[in-house]
Image (cartoon, rainbow, N blue to C red; front, side, top):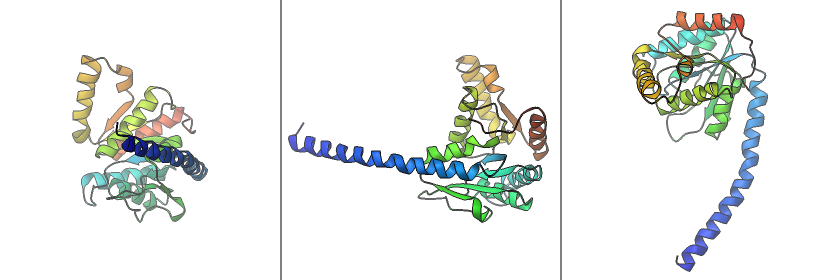
Length: 232
């Protein structure tokens, strides 16, 4: 390697290591602030879905209804704090006069705080991994509405935590049979039956519904026999 290029690379890497060491303190601060804020909220349900879902879309309206009815049952609602399904979830919570929490993150596009997050419950994070911990630690259930890459990331993250028992078994609901059935069919036929990469019990962790009635009833039944508590 050219000596000059080698020296430049070593200098750049040294500067990177120094930056990374200080970065730890910023990460710790985000965890502390998030834990302290969310521990005060009481039992909540986290709602995931696309930032691109517009008002008037059937899934937007369905998210509002689900969030409103869960809030009427005493659950706070946690969303990513942005537009689309996140906005719909917070709107439903506010309509029920429930707790409406936004776990926001700054992105180059799409993400901005929606108007339905309670003023004192609008949290901001720089790191996706810290934000995902906040979604999961205090949530008493997860509602997965149709979404894109971010929703799939959150979907498989939560499923993995429950499957590996790093999280207590927590209701995980997929809403929209038309949207999710193809993915679940692939998981069943290829991931489970053909390749044996998961077990039938793993697939059983996922519940697929189409209506607010089904979602709300599932949570009600689950928590007649299970405790409300942090997941880890």
